[in-house]
Amino acid sequence: MGPITNITKSGLIITRIEDYKNIPRIGSFVFDANGEKIGVLIDIIGPINNPYAVIRVERRAILPSLKPSMVLFYKYKKEKKVKTPR
Image 1 (tube, one colour):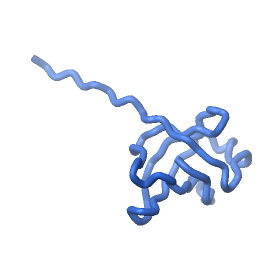
Image 2 (image 1 turned 90 degrees about the vertical axis):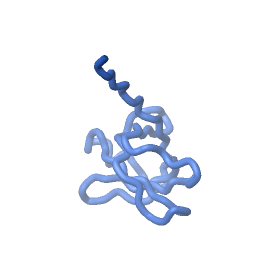
Image 3 (image 1 turned 30 degrees about the vertical axis):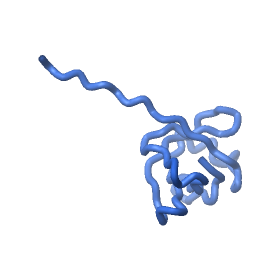
Image 4 (image 1 turned 180 degrees about the vertical axis):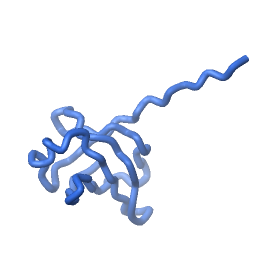
């Protein structure tokens, strides 16, 4: 995904998306370099060629361990298949 640029007072993480041609889906899980789940992608903001991701953390207790410029990664959340009645 990209490096952390800001952590808001409300506990949201803002990261720069390095590859603007491959933007992650809303709802994707976000991890640190050790593979620990950080949270969930809730929004994409900014201009098209320089987007930023807004991430809601899973536990506020991890916020002190996150540092600016720390690189985060994402994994698509599996979509549930909806069965249609026959």
